[in-house]
Amino acid sequence: MPDGNPSSKLHTQHHQDTMGDGRSTSLEEGRGQIEAATTQGRQGNNDSNNPLVVYKQRWAVLVTVTLLNISNAGLWINTAPVSYKAVTYFGVTLDQVNWFSLVFLFVSIPFCFISTFSVNQLGLKAAIHTGSALNTIGALIRLLSTCGIISDGKTQYAVGLGGQVLAGMAQSFLLFIPTKVSQLWFPEDARALSTTILALSNPLGILVTQVISPLLVPESDNLPTLNYVFGGLAVCTQVVTLICITRSKPPTPPSYSAERGEKERQPYLQQLKSTFTTVPYLLLLLALGCGVALFSALATVTAQILCPLGYDDVFSGIVMGVMILCGFVGSAVTGITADRTKAFTPITKLCYGAAAIFAIIMMEMFMVPDQRALVAITTGLFGFFGVGAYPIGLELAVEATYPVEESISTAFIFMSGQVQGVIIIAMVSLLSTDLNPKYNDVEVCSKGTGTDLEPRDYTVSLCAIMSLLTFVVVLIIVFFNTPYKRLEAERAQSNTNVSSSSSSSSSSTPHSSGYSSENASRGDTTSPRTKKIPTLSSEQQVLLQRDPTQTTPVHEEEEEEEKEVVMEEKEEVKVEEEVVMEEEEEVKVEEEEVVKEKKR
Image 1 (cartoon, one colour):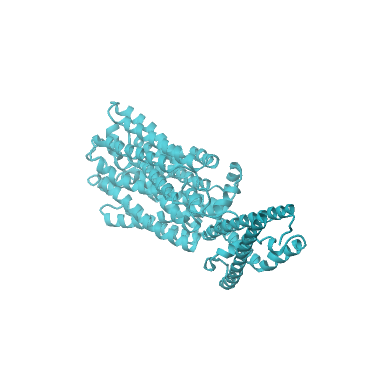
Image 2 (image 1 turned 90 degrees about the vertical axis):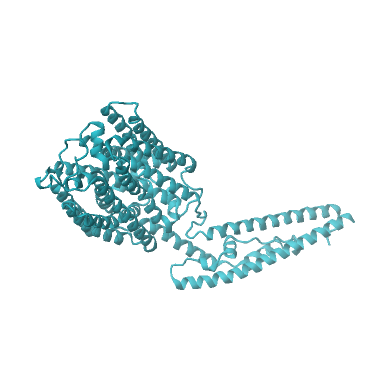
C-alpha cells in the first residue's frame, strides 16, 4: 500500500503515471519498428537502415520511354526506305536525302556529353522531358515543311532537315537511358529484362517505320503523309510523358546497388576518367559500337544496296522487319537467361560470334539477285544473335564500370556506334562502283521514280564491312573479360547483412538483459510493481516478424542453422512480449488502486 501522506501519494501517482505512459510508448514504438522490419525483410537484399521497395510507377516510366524511343526512331529512319521517292519530291540528290538519317549520327556525338551531364546533374526526369520536347518540336517542324505552306521543294527539304536536327538532339536524351531507368526503378532480378525492353524500343520503331513507310508513300507525292503520321505520334508521346514522368527515381531504392551507386557517385569528370581507363569497357565500346553502327547503316542504306539486284523498297522494309523481329526473340531469350544465370560475358561472346557468322552470310546474299528466301533467313539469324546480344552488352558495360553513372557507360557506346556508323555509311557510298550491265534490266532503284539516278554496285563496300566486323568480333571474343562489379557489391552487402543478423541472434540474451539489470538498478527505490517494463531490442523485433523461409545465407547448411536459430529466438521473444503485456495489465490495476486510495 502506498504511504498515507497526501504528498507521498501524489508523488507515487505521478511516478506511476509517467512509467505507464513510457511503457505504452515503448510498446507502440516497438510494434512500429516490428512492422518496418517486416516490410524490410520482405524486399530481399537490403540495407540495414532503408527498406528496398519497388513501385508500380516503374511500368509507367518504362512504357513512356519505350514510346518516346519508338517515335524518335520513326523520325530518324522514315525517309530511308523511300529515299528514291524523296529525291523526286524534294528535287535534291540521293546523298542529300541520306542526311535525314545521317544528321542523327552527327548531332548525337556532341550531345552525348550534354545529355550525360544533364542526367548526372539534373536527374532522369529532366532528361526525359527534354528529349520528349525536342522530339515533338522537331516532328512538328517536319510536318510544317510539307503541309503546303512552303511550295519550293528545296526549301521544304531545308526546313525539314532543320526539324530533323532537333529530333536528332532528342535522341541523345532518350536512347542513352535504358540502363539508367532499369537501375533506378527495377530490382536486381528484373534489370536485364527491363534493359532489354527499353533497348529494343528503338529497333521496334525502326521495324514499324521500315514496314509502313513504303506503304504510306507508294508515290513520291505521298511523302507528306509520313510527316503527318509521325508528327501525330510525337504529340501523343509528349502527352504521355507529361502525365507519367513525375519524378527521376522512386522514394526508396529497388536494389542495394541503386542506393549505394547514388551515394558513391564521383564528380562528372572523374566518372569520365574512370570510364575511359577501364580496359574491358573500351573493348565493349569498340564491339558494341560496331554492332550499333552496322545496324544503323543497314537501316539507312539497305534499300539502296538491294534495289540494284531487283529487290524493291517493300522487300527491303520486310527484310529489316524480319531482322528486328528475330532480334526481339533473341533478346527475350538472352534477357531471361542473363537474369537467371548472370552469365553476361559468355552470353555476349556466344551471340557476337554467331552474329558475325550470319552477318557475313547475309551480306554475301546481298550480292546475289533472286534469293529472297535466303536473304530473309540469314537476316533473321543475324538479328536473333546480333540484336539479341545488344541489351546484355549494355548491362555488361554497367557491370564493368560500376559505380559510374549508368547513362555514361551507355551513352558513349552509342556515340561509338554513331561514329562508326558514319564511317560505314561513308564506306558504302565511297567504295561503290558502276553497276554490272547484266543487272540493268533487273534493278528497280530508279524505275517508276521519274529520276535519272544510276544504281551502284556495292560489292566492295560489303566486303569491307565484313572485314571490319570479323576483326572486332575476334578481338572481343579473345580478349574481353571483366568482373561484375555491381553484382559483387550487391552480393557482398547481402552476405554482410546475413552475417550481422546471425551474430546478433547468437549474442542476444533477452531475459537477462531485459530484467536483471532493471531490477538491480531500481530495487531500492521502487516497488517491484513499478519497475520499468523491458522494451524489445531491434534484433528481437526483426526476429519476431521474420519468416525463416526468407533468409538468404550463402550456403544451404547455414540456411538450415539460421532457420533453427530464428525459430528459437522467435519463441523467446513471443514469451517476452507476453510478459510485457502482463506487466502492462498489472500497472493498470495498480493505477486503479492509487485512484481509489486517493478518493479515500
